[in-house]
Image (cartoon, rainbow, N blue to C red; front, top):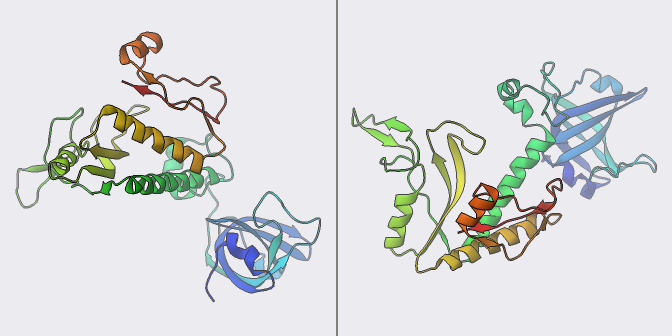
Length: 301
């Protein structure tokens, strides 16, 4: 029997299925034991014989086979997508046990020491907040890739081991095994290669590029980061701004429909005026800075 995700179980009412995941919670009600089973898609309630599941503890990994049934009226949970059904366990197998956790993973995690969170990163990433961030990151990248391909762009991966070129920070150097005493440099940006592609006649290039900069860390500076890298031939500044504006508007409407962009089209602001008024080239133009659903974009030219 093939395993299915928790999110798909409501489609199989009356059928026997197999699910796998982590024990999120265990609740004893006398002759019945309820287990909240968590996988990457969500949480599913299991109904178990207490004797078969009496040793289960949070974060144990289990595999369960059983019949999907509708929950009795008054016992449904509208807060989760599987809240109208439950799985009546027939076979339960423990795949992996877990020690007592060094911290809880059911909250935001902000209150926990960062070093401890990084030490147990595999646990920290089980948080709903962090899992959601990773999923949305993937969706954003997927959307941008499809958008640019539909605009006629060609995605090209450029080399990671390359020659040092003048950039804004120090290079990370990698020694060459075949040429002792010589070094590769990790790219701070694909600048040279994308210009080469334009000279070669590709005209529209993009890449989800990994970049490396050996500089002191700050809030907006990391040793490595991912950026959307674009190059175009035979275009004006206005063509580039229009492309980016359409990309952002389409992305917000598709992936974040609950959010509102304050001004469309995006304001075009002169650099000198922005620096004079805001003392920053990244002005925050939101009207209500306490509203997480409000977005404000602008171009500083």
